[in-house]
Length: 445
Image (cartoon, rainbow, N blue to C red; front, side, top):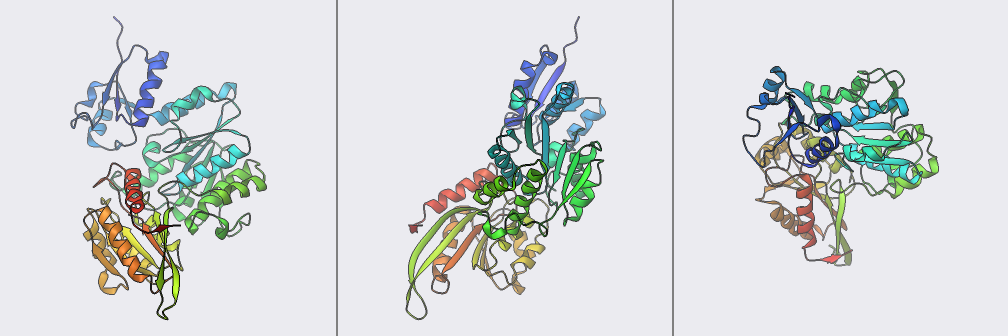
């Protein structure tokens, strides 16, 4: 009697559904018994995993969870959508395979990947954007040819158990992140290193030259190392980009450097980069409200309040980048959410002499942030609010009070924390922010 392989798909979001579709079409798994296990369906979905022969783990399920560790010890094999994709790439090598550009970093990988995709698309390349953004990697497999390019945004969750590295790896700035998911910072950085760990000498590893962790990560593989830095870059300047902030300039430089390596013309790279507005929820200009107000000299002047949605900010470093993106503009900052075990004292340093007039704290970790920002030595006010809608209304009222002193104000929603205390994910959080801002009274501009 033939043995039937028992398979489970652990987590049934976008990647889990993509895996199921792939398995149903694969001759290898045609006779397998496939079970779906998802937290939304069953809170005890991680119970008794050792009864399976093969588990396909979705990125949202931590690799080092004790239930998964026990299953591995019992001999259960693990895979994922990312592993299936790279295995398919390996099998295409003999007949000429598509080239994969993998991009990782603590933040900025989505912006870099999207911009590089747009540059290659404008250059008439057969290019696909996959990963946390773009399409599912497995879904594009039937469309790939030897002339295709795949830009893969790779998170630590996808990289952690990946035994393959892309032909071209791009390592952006790295700093502490996802410590609610990874047990240690060493584990987090070690997961990221898999993007280069299995490279051959003929492969390429781009890395952020001024980030010590990125430099160390690049050394973990055998690929040719190519440093990326902004100092020697002259194709476009930060002031020419529509994305605010030096961190976004670094992302654009990374995309441009890879595109230049692929022999894309400087004219095309520059044209696409300066037109690119960035991705949704990443310092996205949501609304500009203008009104008339009298100055101290009783002269009527035009006031502009600009609301920025940076909901993709899930750690203190990205909040710092948002603060520094508007160095000469008075600002109001809204931050807070679900805690990830991160340190906010660096944010306190960034806020000093930054022109920030008010910090509005919301979410589960608002009291922790309050303590670490050290209100006693700060030059700005801090207040607690109950929810995001109240935060926006308070920011708007406070901004109106400041309009007698300033002609331009920035209201920045950069949480620096996870979203799961009140929202489904960071995208839901950003969408709710935009909805509340859109309902404010005031003249749009």
